[in-house]
Image 1 (cartoon, rainbow, N blue to C red):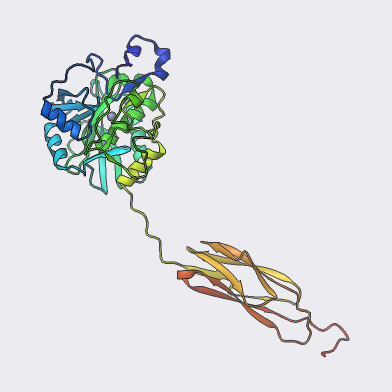
Image 2: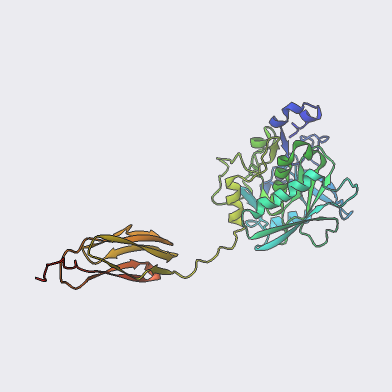
Length: 391
Ligand SMILES: [Zn+2]
């Protein structure tokens, strides 16, 4: 996916139409022969990865100063030989693509502490101002879903107590990350320096995308990256490491708004699609408040009327659905049902009898498991007019 070369030629006006992969290695020809042996290729194929441009590279960790050999798949996913082993042993239960997942997931619930690598002073690995804002937006994207995973964000350079560390690396645009291991997210996210040239929303998109990998999401179009990249990306096998997430589209109906598509363009808005949200809430459901005990109360519990017609409002406090009935032809109620808290009206017809005791009736509110409440209704008869006598 090398359309980014257009930008390198300076045709800035075309930015909005260009497509980038999550990671750009402008000097690497995507069709070069991968220097990965056949057995490893077949193992990654078995896990459902597109191995057409797999690379074996040295990952120089700018934070720890350590180096590690990693496979780079689908342009932005770093997988160590050790994690490959883990994924192969974890079949059926590893990174999830979104809307597929891997076999590796983060244990949940968990608080994930994110560090934006930054301090005052100049260092090419420090996040720039756009990246720092975008990282906050990406963290907010996840927290807004109320997942079992809760993200915190701090900026600094001491990475030891953090779960995800986001650094800046040189490059034309895009990022790289990896998949979870041992129930923990992948720790080292690299954002290429050129990404910021495409604006805050695009950086937010890339950050959110890479954190998606860190918690186990695969590329939504892992099976055919030409869907988002426009070209390249062999049709992969339906790998055992690519597990479809229920409630999200499958390979026959790809969500073109997904933040986890393999390639992005210069007009990304940085937000999750609805199916992205479904995928994440399915993988990492947040705690739902158990509904409280069913309750129902009414006020007032008795109403009395004079002999003329009249009506009175009854207030209902409830967390259940309820129905209202009465036991007398001269009483009517409206509405005759409701749910949760609300009100209804009791109305009475005129009572034109004289010298009669008050008539009485009952209105019953039935709240199912919350039980019933009654309101007693009384209405007095018409008083004698002057000169009138009881019959
Ligand atoms: Zn990616």
